[in-house]
Length: 87
Image (cartoon, rainbow, N blue to C red):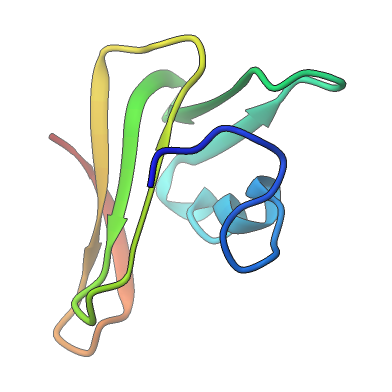
């Protein structure tokens, strides 16, 4: 799913959804009264963010302003989020 609107799947806002990735360098920035939202990885604009867990769950987000990098999540053998990597 590619998305950029106010609500993420599951009824959370994108700000809530992205909060769990903050400690791994991911930052979600929304512009008030606009559908122009972007994701950054260590300050660099992300073209595409992908979170695919080992149980088959998937979430992706494409920044409205483009970007040059693709980042994806990494999980340990117990399907616990343990990082984010640049592809």
